[in-house]
Image 1 (cartoon, one colour):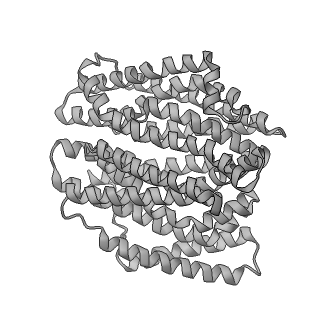
Image 2: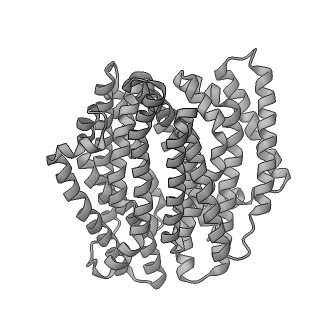
Image 3: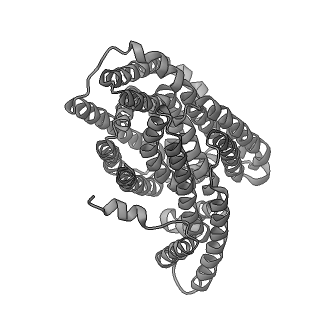
Length: 499
């Protein structure tokens, strides 16, 4: 069984890495064609859209996956189909009325957008709200059935459609508003694609619709706290998208375009680099969550503890590998990818956010799989409040870094509270020593990378330094971790084993 987990995790990770690389390339293209202002407008529209999408479907796919795992443990095939049907019904109940209200009541958008240029662009995405919400439920059914290959392929193809069409549509566009509009159109078409393909695959593989009545109550009971937490995340991001430019204009006498450009640099350029580990954490979560749910309902405490420990250590390992690279080369990354010094500076200074971020993400997933959605919601709200306090109180002193400081603080609070709850739920969890060793390795790798980069900076251009220092940092960190016995090659051997 563990061999299958390793293979599934590797499969999802490979596809997810390719998908994120495509999205990363796309952001570079957008930043160079439509500029920081166009990217800021595009990001604001997506942030607001994400609020409604999150409200409609964020908690349902995870819950559908868990209900299917429970039905699978009980051998109830009809229960699986009922869970999917309940999920589709639940998301349609919300998305259809909201899409109609927003389309015909456009004046409501005045409250959502401080920049009038965003309104028409946002309306382009409304049909995608319904389509991609249904796809999200089908995606949850893939997780519940442990069908990770079709899930991974469809996710990758959706991203590929968006990137290819987006590059074609924005090519040669000088107007940032028109560029943002065409980039948004590419997003909508990608939603249509994933909706059609996922439904076709679900029915082709024997999926059916069934009476959802028995699953509606457990679906809403479990999904609402998750939805509330993720909706709060989207609301928070949208609030930041609206308020941060206003605070920057007030504190530094910037114009609206200048403030949005600054927001676009931080959120559209720097944050995606810092969130690179999220794709790897997401891959682990997709594979481990159904296993944890199944073991939880079977009351298999030994396997639960094993999976939790491995998940926590994997997230620490990922952060330890990547923090030195971003700390040492953040400036060069910003210069090479975006020709923007500030974006690289933000990556360099905020690289240490990766460790609490990875831990907060994986522990939230683990706790949700163990029926602790209400607790994780409360913990998230505490972190979100701390983030908003940072933004409101620090923007006039440290500018755009108020957001980064608040983001770091929210992750630290969430991860500390999550880990404390996990230690109560799974007595005897061992990760403190591993974390301490990881911090030692992380600091040592940052010093090594800074020393190497300092030698090369006067002789080697930025792009060449990336190709020299990044592999060197990764090799140094990996060797250090291996010597401390913080990872082994056993998972790789199991992955390639034919038995």
